[in-house]
Image 1 (tube, rainbow over the protein chains, first blue to last red):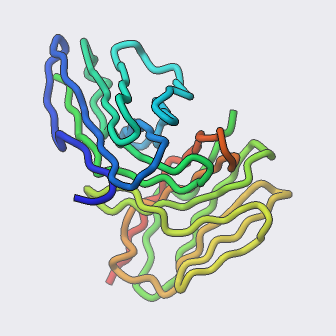
Image 2 (tube, chains in turn yellow, orange):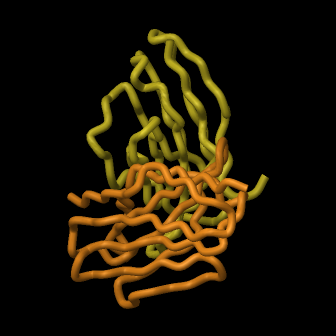
Length: 112
Length: 114
């Protein structure tokens, strides 16, 4: 698949579980993002990585832990989540210095 | 920080009619304003954007206008078609290297009735 891919597409987890979301971009970009999309709320930027360094962290709870091992891959590690964390988690990428962000299909997360 | 307000939250139009979605922003330093379309169950995709050095931009049936003084920008869709039904998001940011923060509006669900 080209563009930005995300796995898994759907995830159900209990509050005591640990899971990880994966994002991969095939566009040669050097910036990657995690967004949270909840019903009736704006897209919320969670983390930004540029050249594998975290450049923004928008006051996200520590139960969300990002990892960017290289410019093509981005992970979001989840542990001891709450039911209110249920949402669509979107990954995006862009080329540093250019504005357009390209989104992945998202992971629909349900926390029981 | 930037705050983007978007109206209306839902919009229904008859096929062939026009649709207008409006956004306001708070940070006068913002200079890049994209619009994204998200169809049901799909990813957001950029459909058009405008920068602060122009007042209007068109791409076929879609146009965006920007009023820097009033700090608002609008999306206009003419001759609407059923495939235009989706959620539309406006956003604002400060363009340039080292700047990554896109602030989004809450979205407008557009329904085009055949």
